[in-house]
Length: 185
Image 1 (cartoon, rainbow, N blue to C red):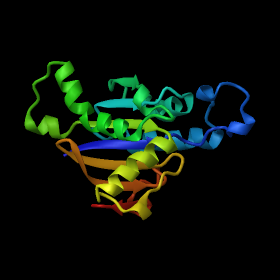
Image 2 (tube, rainbow, N blue to C red; image 1 turned 120 degrees about the vertical axis):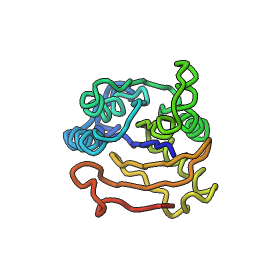
Image 3 (cartoon, rainbow, N blue to C red; image 1 turned 90 degrees about the vertical axis):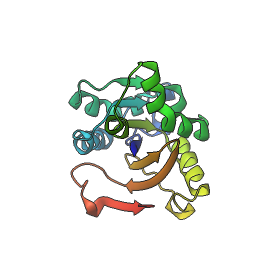
């Protein structure tokens, strides 16, 4: 199975208090701390790429992880942008590993192929839409659709389908079992 670490951006400055372009809205001090917690939680995971919405709050959420995993490619992708089609975003993530493998002309062993993992940082509307699709597919229930700022979903894929999902409300130093709400596993 392959893994998608689906991350909602950390706490950003409130829209009402920000006077610039929304895409450039930065993280708050709490958000910066959450981003560091994400980096600590995922630094030892077998990550092959970090993907982010173009929004600064998303890029800044995964920046500490990108610094810790220096050799892991970091890409800004439009399908994770706020307002994007959640179903298209989910399909893009599930199929991302295969597309990257084909694009790079790589021949991977079965073990290497199974270990491909991606971190993807997006927004509440996109993630909620993805989770709604997973609920309709019976991977999770509708009551399990959660997406707190700075939270993480660990999605396990088999082929082109998500088959398991686990929600972690506060990744970081509390990344242990007590912080994990198992969903579908």
